[in-house]
Image (cartoon, rainbow, N blue to C red; front, top):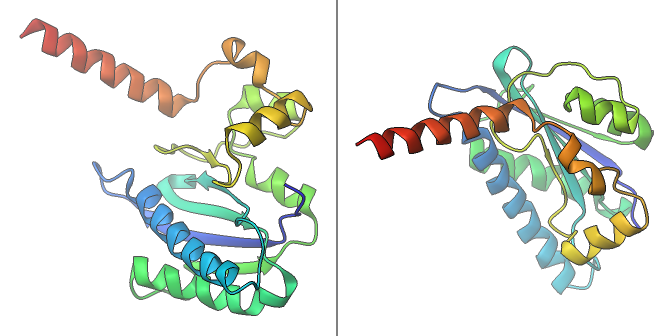
Length: 195
């Protein structure tokens, strides 16, 4: 990647109704796309180079969904990016309460990564040396890497040893949310076969 993540945004999506569990993920994807559009505009003007690098992790302590969104923003664009992110959040979420979006600079990347990943499954947390703390049920992917990291970049990172679980996927149980989804799919398939 070559860039350090230097900006942390926490977005509170609140409690979700039953049947609307994926709504926070959809809203966050919409916000990301709108921020990427701003970035692409800046790139076309020659103010930035390359894609935007980011990482999102999800938590839902007590059922209240929020995203920890880590980004790389050039220092000279921090002020503008902060306003753009807030504006895009307001366009997607509507009128914002004062504590809905919190933005700040990242001064200790290792600390914020440990903080953001604390809700990962215990088996994964142990492998990467993070203390697991339950962060509620998430129906989308708990960690969403940068769209700028395509297949070739991920493969190169695995070969370099930067991604821990390439060869160990088989020995780790899938996250609880995936197990629930798979169980529902199996039940649905069995019911369809019975008809």
